[in-house]
Image (cartoon, rainbow, N blue to C red; front, side, top):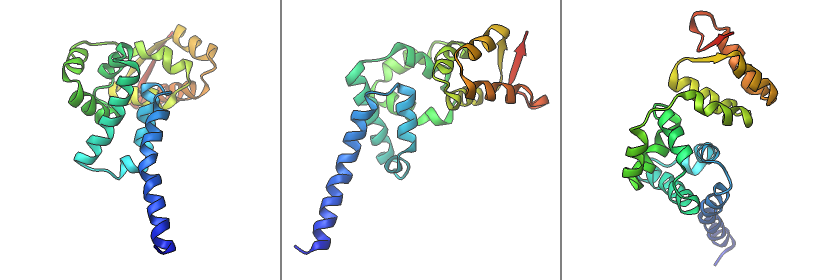
Length: 175
């Protein structure tokens, strides 16, 4: 065996190990962060069709096996079911556990129910996804105080920028 073929064999073994290591890493992340990680991975982005479904299903299967069905996250999925970034995850979850997902999606939740966790982690990207899927959110003065108290600087910047967008404002501040 020459050096090039030995090197290729070694690299292909590592490439096969990467998804397994990432699944183990995802077990320590929230569902939202695991979705963000999976979306950012090159092997997920390059996969298409059946291959992409399989990659997303592996994430869902791994997380459900590790922690069961997270009712809070399923409620979040209901709130975010229109978000494009969540479609591969929702489709994979639906493919593996259709009854669980159909039951969850039959309920309606206010997008405001997610704000506490978003502000606690200063997750501006999740706040933006929430805004994209609900077009407009209303915040009372108490909500702004909560953002400030939690030192959620990135979320506060998004809220203020969106509230000051004139006619295109996706955030309404109620004082």
